[in-house]
Image 1 (spheres, rainbow, N blue to C red):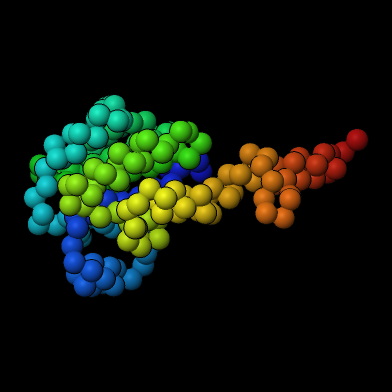
Image 2 (image 1 turned 90 degrees about the horizontal axis):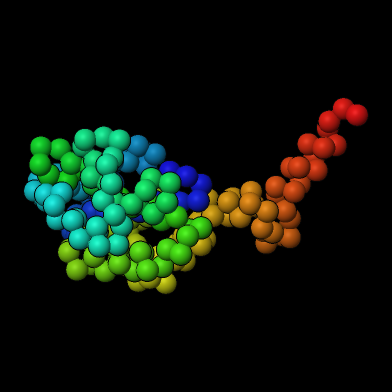
Length: 172
């Protein structure tokens, strides 16, 4: 994942009790694996072919991944094993005009019985504005803004500050 992307995980819709039960059993969120939600669902990777309407299907670096879109930009990936989806995620490039793509992906997941998790493994309210707020308020978006020279909330220009510091440290 690039600093200009935010990753969401797609899981089969299940009742909240089951979701929290499964999630609670996975203590280390750094190593959280969404495959537990896909186990026994028998969802074929072809169930996601309509994603090709908004993101072109491209060759993945792995034969086990069906990829739509480009890794450096907006992309949707289906990891499959033995003919069934094992992990599904999508990344949004927030430096692009991502709203139409995001709206499509949200509609697709809602209409096909999937739920979305954010990078903190929390269930996402699947309205466009809620998901945009998650992206816009993410730590990587704030870091990206600082690194790209946009002022942060204190009016600091992080990249400019680093450049000035580096210039001061150079021997004459």
